[in-house]
Length: 261
Image (cartoon, rainbow, N blue to C red; front, side, top):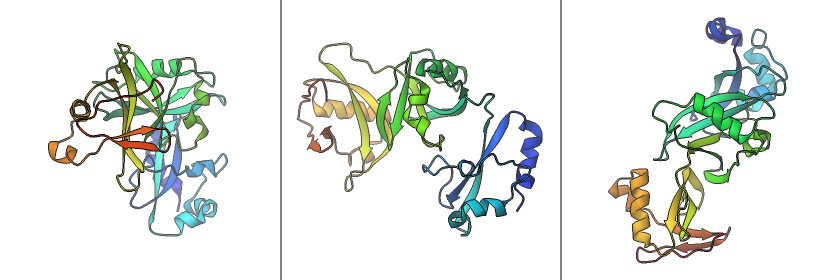
């Protein structure tokens, strides 16, 4: 029942630099990043690892911990040096829209997206394109919510209003998809279930040319994502304009869109 007994080996090494967050997740969930569940420490004000027990945790979340189908998970994150500082979880994505690394940053309360990009470069994993200009992207429910401008305060990010920062994180990627001609548009792509329409996976940007054949666009998407032919043959492309207007695209169709599409 004693959480201290579980945490003690690691805390003897890094207790001065980190704090521990607790999550209670279903046994089928492998990490706190898989669902937006809030961490338990958000319910336990100023709890101390040397004092808290699982019995005390149960008191704060009885509906979760009374069942054997729940696992208690621990995540170590850097301590905040100052009360006004903030945690931000960043995830690095390559040009293939694959996550190649992640980190939890500690930023001052006045930090902007530009400051975040500078700090993210310092901890970027090997192989990440940190030599290119970086794009700071907010993603919500597997769809691109916003590309944050350099002067936007981090405290105004959508993720800053959420307690589970490991799930509601900020995406860092090379800002390579930029229109170079008047006929080009940078378009948001996302995957969705064919029956329910529910989005899933990692969304991405791609520049398309007005008048481009859908078949050519499909080939570029397949190459970018590295999807095998057998799987890609089951994909369907749908053009979404607004929350309700959706059009199934055929290979022979040409792309037409307004600047606001």
